[in-house]
Amino acid sequence: MLIGKPKNFDGSDSKKSKDVSGIACAATSGYPRVCLVADDETQGAQIVILEDGKLIAGDFVRLIDDSFANTPLELDGEGVAYADGFYYVIGSHGRPRHEDGKEDSAEINARVKASSRIFRISFASDSIDSKDR
Image 1 (cartoon, rainbow, N blue to C red):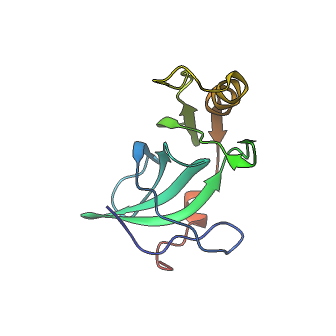
Image 2 (image 1 turned 45 degrees about the vertical axis):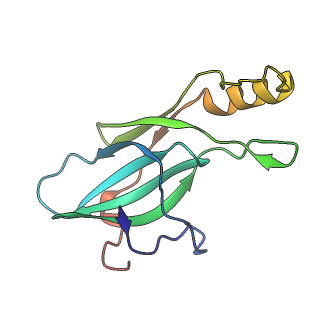
Image 3 (image 1 turned 180 degrees about the vertical axis):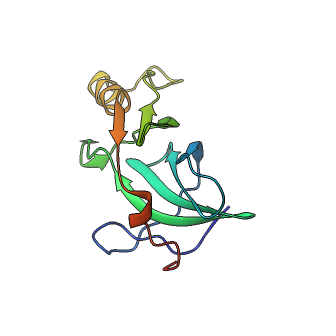
């Protein structure tokens, strides 16, 4: 479970990730470590600070702003990796499941487009304030 009170980069409050499906940390040793988590129920990823025995919620990083019928669509982030100073976030790239066969094909196509992406993100780990949570 993430602890702390996250903020968006614009200073507004944000919710903590709940459905974490991937995490990657910057290649450093010791604590604190700056990491990024993918949340498959949001439109982005969340910075977290890994300390000895706890994860502290950090800023939310919006990656998409797709919507259908004025309803935000999920990125459906499935994984995060870190290499050479960059974080990589990947969406599910899958077609949504539907049981009744009645889903609107335009909605399905919009959901597929929203989740069929890969992002390369860079930020300086020392720009993250782990004390302000």
